[in-house]
Length: 270
Length: 261
Image (cartoon, rainbow over all chains, first blue to last red; front, side, top):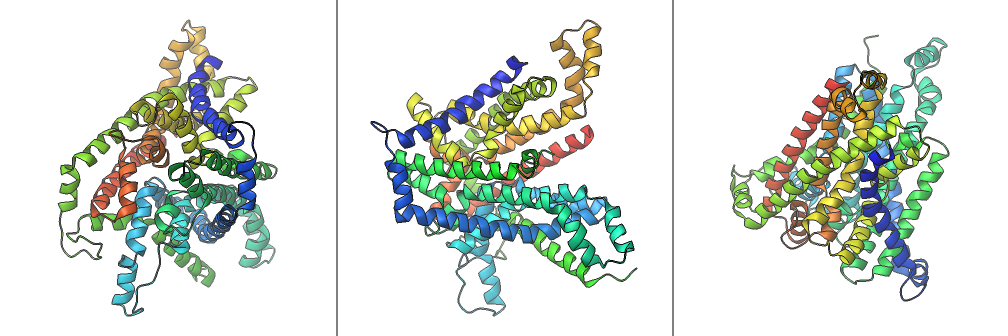
């Protein structure tokens, strides 16, 4: 049996475990051991600001995705099968479109001469085009769009398991629909909320394409610090240290969440 | 009970708006790609296929397309058997270490892709795999493995291993009984996993940004570089073709999975 997993395992060991290990090593070793790279992260302003901004954006994206995703998952759960399949297909289809293609689409929609500005000007809502992209706003709009399926799918999976008779029981005992929702349905859907929020937050922490293309150079997320240190400045040690801190943040979040719900659930396996 | 509550109406409206938000960017690209205008205008002034002509006439885009298709195909050819073998072993073995191995195989989904990309770049730089075809394929095999493993494990869950035991008790060896009894029954999940690995390789951008170069640049890397500079509607044409390809493959995969379930 071990022989059967060995090709796959070898690929994983050589192409992700070894590279990430190398990265970690490089962050502390450069002609001798050094913590200089980490000292910089915690003392230099540009690093701090980037980490703070990344966490803020990730939090905002997670909250917005939850607010947008919950009603959709709820609806998909409460309508007949054929409708829920349609709703879920609409959620999943963009998921299988290249992130790059969707970033391009948002550029086309949001830029100064883009679809939305042209429409608003045509309708005389605005006289000057709005700055919808090349800033944090554009980044958040596109990132929520890309991550929303990761919120809706675990929410829907959890809601599917909530027995319908519980709601009827609540109603038969005289509770209003909103009270049964708040007291029965909402608490039972919380594991799905946690799973979805974890996935969205963690994925957002490492997002690269949307902030790079839609952030206009001002929204410097952590992933961009990593790539700039590699591509522009050849600062491999600094890039590695930032990467390690990012990875540790992600692992810490997974670890904390795993105390409450099974990780299989977060990774969408159950 | 025919009266629909206001809360219910609000739910419909909000959900409809969210679904429009989700689907609109995917649908907006096609009209842009068929527009004659140099700059993005919507609605497009007149119908034209000039961006498609530009794409097909440009040797650099064609070379990038060949790279993308070759990498994606090789990824499927390698990642599918590796993933199937691993999923089979994980589902059959009772060794405790298998759980750890299972988690390890899902690492590509957990580690932020930017970290993976930079790490692979460092390793490739040492061994001379930067800007090579094998380097690109290997990285995509790693990234595609989890999709195959997840899909096949799901397929194996509904398969009764006792059937394979029967075949073996009738004298087949393990390998033959796998191909004769097990594989035909999980075929759909294998195909679906392979298709997902293909799409993953076709769409992969970030690792390619770091490790690909020269004549071995996939489409996504060229698109990314082009998007940084200016918005060329040729990209809309390419995006439309890629999206159409993805959708057809996903429909194929889900039809397969439905047959399995």
